[in-house]
Image (cartoon, rainbow, N blue to C red):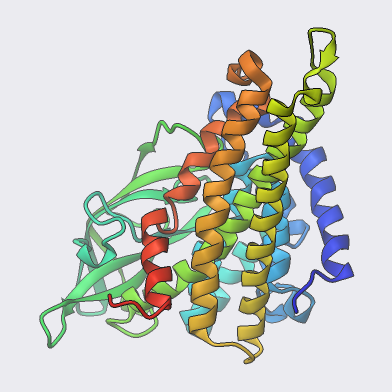
Length: 392
């Protein structure tokens, strides 16, 4: 059976120390200003966080790292702030992984060293204004013109796509039609600053204020033909696989959110008095915190089981189907638990929970997107049902 090793627990302490020293003192100010702290990213790179699943030849940890270690890092960053957690999660899962998994050697050498070091970030352009869960409805098009692809279309809600250190965004685009009449979708890397690649103004979001999120527009955007990622027509399959891995990472982010709420609410219930006693003596409070502790434990176990299975798959010991099912289950339970956790914590804090000076208010705002990004809760239930053998 899986368990976290002593190395994983030691690494957890390192990341927790980093988050509490480099993020916690500044996060309220960053959140209020919707400021993306670009100078924090190289520090995360120096700690090796972006290279945990990357071979040594590209600057990564090689055999010293694994997917479970990445989830530990995401959880610990997310325990202090969800925006910083998603910056790492998206930077690796959606930025680095597609290039690492499907890129040729020249593409890997061109982009990965800077991405692994934290000198640069990469984005993942799948969602469109009218193609979210229905990713097959992609309308962005790429037409081959000699030695170039000409891209026209739009993407929505793209993380790490407009920072000062964003180097490339990989996007899906229709490049033709399959024999059965369905659209042929390919993945193409578009370097930042390419003429015709327009980064729209940052979104005014409910939560994740410190995370960089933009819409993207492509108008006659020309990139070299060699920027095609993998084989032509394989883009849709590539990005679905990328999302499978990303769901486990989002589960880890949700665990960090729930853990923070448990700690904050428990401490508050011990120190806040009403009618001459700490509010934690009241079963109305203590039972909610007990339920929250159960949810945190369950979410963590499901998440790290999925991460362990992912590492076992990499070693050739598990099936893709098994990992896919575990990822969907972990993502569904953990994200819904996180949303519930923020509601419970805010209720325990009472009126103070509604004040932005208390972190639970930020976690309350940040949690909802967890049930939406990387596949909605409804999509996860659909995937789990299919994994049970029910008809599609």
